[in-house]
Length: 275
Ligand SMILES: [Fe+2]
Image (tube, rainbow, N blue to C red; front, side, top):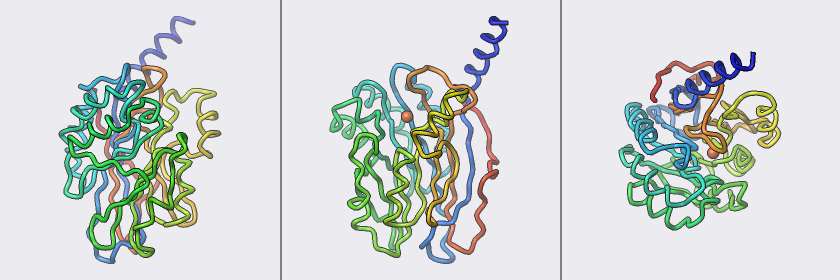
């Protein structure tokens, strides 16, 4: 019995750890001008380049992301695990990313734990990934991208992040931890998070523990006062070198003006693997 359980568990872990799922979504972005063409966001999260996640896998994920033809590529934190010097390898893997509106990121808690943040930033800068730390950027007139610093490491400051965003502007927001969704009280919009790894090993009691630490926001879409949040299951692993019942995810979100029907939960269409 123990042998059977071990074999089944090992098979699931082998299958799920690097079997990337492309999830596809369509969502209203408040403030986007009527008639504006959809803005395609391709989101990667929780890469965790480190002892358990190699550069080759991340490069294959980046190549897959490029096939999805985003107007904007977002990397929502945890570029590295354990040591800052993995950042050079992570950046090399991500160097193929490009998009008309840019490739952007925010820090995750593991980036802070890895230390030497200026070195990690320099590595990302070198390959054109612009990290927003409680800051924003105008993508076009009336359309802004904002990024929070990480919640767990106490650097999150939504007031600073939204300071230069006009009240009626459309806002796309990055915040690594779903707990940062509270910051959207200052400005509505669509927020992209990660952090949970969709529980990574989605076997009791992990889902209950993750939900307890993120106000129940574990994976998929959530709403609060008109703002929307997508919690991405991420790409890599942490603490354990495998996933079970929580496949890695690349999310593709077409943001549309109000009045065009969103397609919400259950909209997953794409599903292809990479190993
Ligand atoms: Fe993570």
